Length: 242
Figure 1: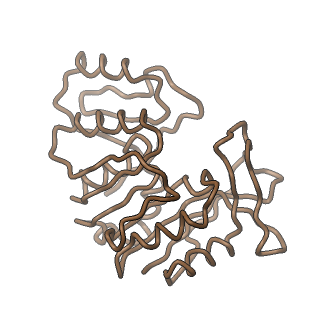
Figure 2: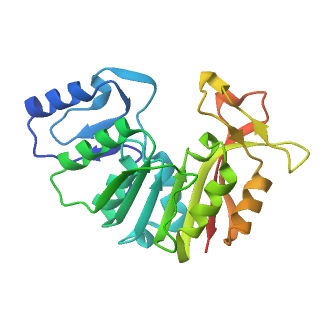
């Protein structure tokens, strides 16, 4: 059963692994290892997450863990690979991890290698707006990435095109709530982050997903966070099928 925490079984000794983790610090995500080391005990960036698999856990509860086995997966915004590695390691998935930051790709490849297993993962550098592989994936995770796209419209359309018939898409993103369902919020620089662009309304997300050819759209979770207090915003997880 999935945990919120990201764990890697490794044959590396503490001494070997300590040198590697020191080389790649600072860390933003908690990673525990079977030899007792944890990235939280090294130099860290803030905010730091001890539970990087929390979103994947919620998604698995929605679709059912049994459904996840042996799927062809696209992990958009794969970061340092926690979702990609977990899906390959625990469920035998074949995964494409799409990431814009080459430093994150380097960390992801290192972490996948530490497992010592022959994981079917391809970490690729690319743009979530333009990346498309038509009708290739059973499952697409678009988690914490959509609001970073200056062009979320083409991002969603290309994502939908990459999904196989019968496949599932999960989007987790910042959303804006107002009396006008078409109203979205431009959030450039929110929280000091100049990679933030759009908090779409739930209605607009639905319209783009359905215009992309997907069906059975639903909001899985709507989560209030402190950063968004007074802004009529939340973080939401959406699901749809092709």
